[in-house]
Length: 265
Image (tube, rainbow, N blue to C red; front, side, top):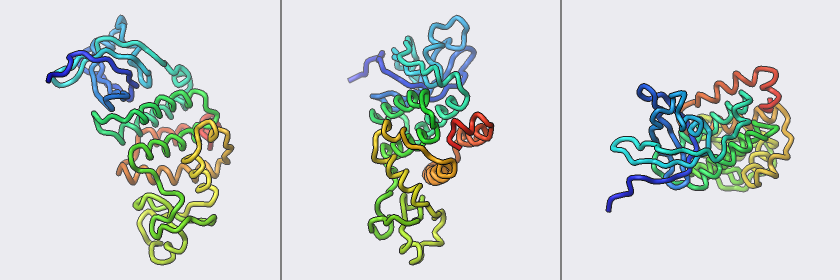
């Protein structure tokens, strides 16, 4: 049975690039189709009715025509523009990070409605958050859980014993925390194994098991922020086997006086 030529879908614009003389090639994340790519014809023309509705990070309702190679967006209407993200460079960069992280973890055409809902919520949180780094850590942990890489923070990934309230270790290759006993028993030389402080582990556990509203009330010191980011970025980089472009730009941006305050450093 042939599929309908036209379909409607909500979508969040993850990334875009110029295509042809006046078009844009969009990578979109949708609630029912997962990640898709589509062409917005004429979107680069000043008179285009679509251009404002297919900006980066925009949540829109689309009417799409199936194409032989790429689908074509025929109509677009903005549902959420997330304007605060466009008015602050640091917030914009965190939005780039959220979109890039999701894009790297998912293949095209695989439905994951909870992941769509998470990204949609994240774009709203980033427009209001007073601690963007904390918001990013919450998002990372929830995304990892939804794509099958939830880190084990409560049991040793080697011996399965309950983790005690002491300084432990985090092993990206095993996907979680290693207790001191296993570390002393021969795992200390494991590639990537690094110490994780008790406070960092407590915060990661809290973020993994509480809702965003509760987590957003946490107050994290600059040093602890650095510890949390180091653990999460090492784990994410291990899984993806690459560094994300937005991470390097974030690190550079947060060295600026204003960026450091908002980024949690």
